[in-house]
Image (cartoon, rainbow, N blue to C red; front, top):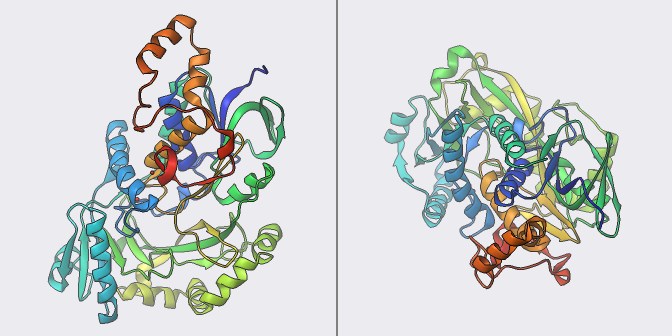
Length: 459
């Protein structure tokens, strides 16, 4: 059989790809893993352009994959940060209703938080809001003490370091853009702009490019990645004291966006935003950035137009705010009325990879496809960064079962060690799954899996 460079190649050096590789490397130290990132540095896109919030899991449908992975991932992320000296702060946040029309949604959110067992969540009134955030005004709110902030780029860098340290031959390679796959009987050659790598299995965690990577594998994703840009402002140094922690509005459940909010970052700066506007470039962080290819991919898809028709009024309002500081400020003043134009200045922007279905439906939960020797992560929306370690566990469980990784490790061990392992584990349960060990089943290829369903038929 053909010897391969790596047993597994992970495409994408964002936090989901790195967390998945880290979890697989930790569980299966006998296999070699490579992570390929097309940019010259890790966490270049969604991971490095988000708001840095460790989400509690409050917003998500009870029992959904997002709710489960967020809660588990948050706890594990905080422990990981403490263990490896990564700066973070569990500062808590308030969600503030400024209009009586929002009170019903606030109550529904509180009930959802209780169903998701969010620690310490509390319904608060106007006086308590001002105690927590003296500059904020509202008629009611929620206090969520377990929410925090962190530098996700530092987390990604530490994961990369641990991946290479955990196994003999593991690599995290930047500047390697995947441009194709060459299929052979017993292996796949991953073709990059800097050469090729032979591998048995591929895990696609390419974020903003994940549907295109899936197509390189000959897979029909079933969704299209539509980019949404989010613009941020930053409070001036003189105005930073107006925000002590995290201040959020009551979100509209019709959209997968949380609304313009205030976030005190780990370095002490305060960001305000983001809005959410259709982007004409998948990796375009400027308001006028444009890519013909990206625009064609989005606008030639009927799902995009169906989404536009459903939400044209919301989209128009977001676009107006994107190009008007006055309108952006007006949205911020709903939460902090004393804020003035002199208190804010333009800051960064981020682009969200939003998976969109053919009927214009925004895919709100994780969406993963398995095909042959590939796993394609086609939607990993917020709170993917906060939940990344839990998502990594799910991908590891899926890869272990679908790729037969336990057996692959046994094949590489000396015969005496194999007999010892066999005597201990044959007929027992695969650790952490509550199921019998399984080899890869050909009949399951092509099924759609979510992290919540991995291995167990399973923030």
